[in-house]
Length: 262
Image 1 (cartoon, rainbow, N blue to C red):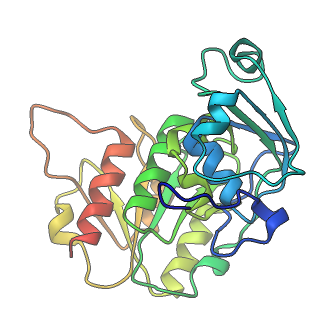
Image 2: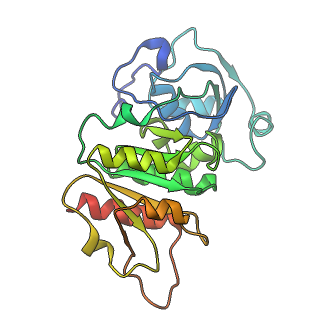
Image 3: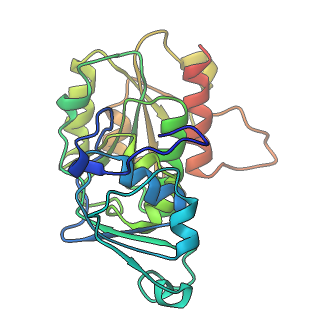
């Protein structure tokens, strides 16, 4: 991304830019992204295939970069953009239609820098929570997000908006069998640490010195028994007794911070 005052080329795969990373298998067909951070990050991602950008002139001016002359761009009014996205979506004058990111396999993202944490979600289906977790994963330099293919939200504008650009940064690996993925993480040397409110040990006590994969379940139900059984240890956040639990995205952010602060 260019610094303020500079203009780079927002070219995506068409420009063969270097340094970006894809993230996961998404829904089939086209994906529509909206909002400045989500759209700008997608335009800068070399793994993205862009199909069309609808934008107001103010929206284009807000981008920290320049589109190539042949980019498929159509200027539109604010009301017209509102009809392209979910109701009341904060599009900020930018709506990008693109192809989903290509599928990744877990082995693709575990080969380098093993000290970077992995986040594993067990049936967390709220796209706002998944987007927020992606944002925290990017902020604390996580290696990847791992979810089950069937019980996680598809790649979408809601996830991308909540992730504030992190959808294009953090590899999102979707797997058929989450228990098998946890076994693969163990084989790669990761300590699988499940967050569970009923656990005796606290996060600080259970956090290892080496590579760690944080496993979090859906709010309310928590981790399934089989997934908890594939963790090396369970731990809880030392929150006040006055509060029963935290939102799963907040819990993920705290765990990732703890790993970064070791």
